Length: 294
Image (cartoon, rainbow, N blue to C red; front, side):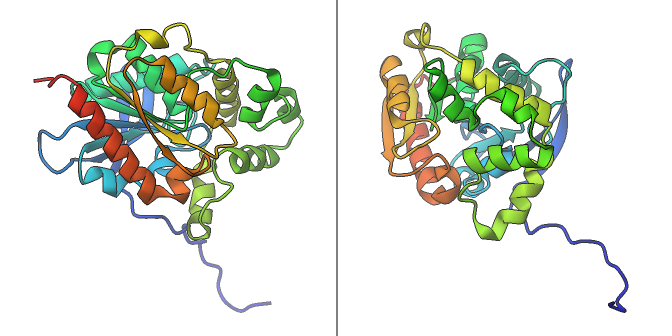
């Protein structure tokens, strides 16, 4: 037996992150945001929308600094994820879009460019549909406009054989199965402990409901109506959102453009430098085609 006195377990090593804070969204709840001011006061604002089972930090930690060299950055945790809003209501993607719009209004950001990654893509699309005046353009990454296809495809996206199977798993097994499948399969060893500490903050009832909401989402009927400049970053070897589904989204939106990366679904983490550059180029493409909000 060791004679050393017990010590508190140290916090897991975390990557460099921008300043963050909790913010109350009136009538909705409290969420957590990260902010970077950008290179100048009039820099365009990107609203970063993360993927399923991630958090703002877990999704964007490798991109914050590079994106912040060009744009003002605001990123939030979606409801049920990380330090996002907690609610007894069933999880709805439309509520996430309304949360994001409420944040834009609270911070008086003016028209923003939502950058939606995976689940963040449907949230961005719904922001345009429900809150058009505050959306200057869209950047959509590793995402699709519809997940209403075969049962096998929907369950593949969820990484499950069905929600009933999850109910029979222990909470720890549920966490491991979903997060390893969707986002953390290739997490860097350096940040592994920190990544799992991020996941430990989730409300897992809401996470499972979010998976169901994504599997049921479809924007196919109104994608042709999108009237803001849109750019896409397509992950060509994506086992979660297949490239052909991403291409279907791209071809459904008028006057969109796209870039491609030879990467899987976790490209924002595993190839964050390259993904950051592609997002910067995509935003610049949107800005060239968007009216000046002033």
